[in-house]
Image 1 (cartoon, rainbow, N blue to C red):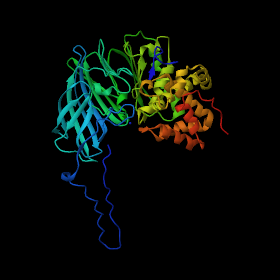
Image 2: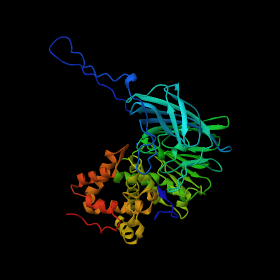
Image 3: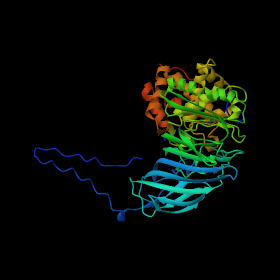
Image 4: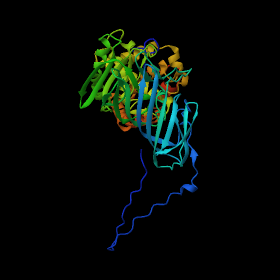
Length: 488
């Protein structure tokens, strides 16, 4: 995510366990029978328990849910902006990770009309923003199951007094569903934590004449009467907060690049100009970043520019970032495009396992801005580091980006000191090892979740250096570290 200049910016992831029977081989004519797998305990003797109402994230303990792993969401919604009413059916394909008597889905505010599990009606109730589902039969660990939830109502954003609100916002002509660290649960039932990534299909029905943009590959649209259904498919695993829905009137640009569709949408509230030119630069920036980080990780390119005054940031919504119009008020701005596109590798493809490690997203994306600026004829990454090292306020040094706390999750320390940490690593290990670290990280953790400890371990393995002191000072210290020096 990139915050606007007014707030922060300084320049701106279903496996079913099976048994492979192997025929024995011997000297007799008759083959030996395959070994018989140990029988699973019968359902009557299993200890079925409710899944946890949260994944246990240190910063957000109630986010997400335990007891299952989602593989795919199919989200079908219809939204009427004139009435600010949404109705929908979401199908969740998942596998139980424990023997479940019940489980939770995150769903804020909307009224649930019915729930089925594997086609059978299930009991359901609400505990705040948690939908508690009790299937007719217990769910056995390792088995897949399918949940279908029908719901309706007036969507509302989620409000957090510490880090601000996010989620579904009604606009004059449509709606925007956007936000970090949570937003998806305001418009569909979900396991709302990045540790449970899944693929997505979206079918969004809106009044004819409006555009409905979401993630992934455009899958066509159709109009019946006064309503148009827009379809989108994200086939790479995606963290739930990276899903988006933007409904309104847009200038649409479609094309193809390297065999992938390109879909841009710029609000017609803006005159044609800097925003259009900046978003048109998406594939150019992506190609450069691909040369640094390795293959672009998703099946589509794109960007969406919105003009709602309540949103003063850009967010790396998967394959199609959403940008506030304010980023382009001073002219063309490919720096913010570079930041959000870098997140497609670092934050989206390689996703957080826990929110404490947010610097892995923002530090690497900030550094990508510096690399892009240098490539595009601006200041070098070293010059950017020097300016921030000399000019960052004391709060940046007092706030450790590797453990910022909830209140400082999107602080300047996470972004700018996070970026400086990346440069300190580069200086310490040298360019050859540094860029190998970045490419290896993106490749080995593609479509998965990761932690700071794993990043440090990889950096040490690739560089052949012991880097604990460096990361301790730059990520966890509360004083300005010494300037980094090349190690011999």
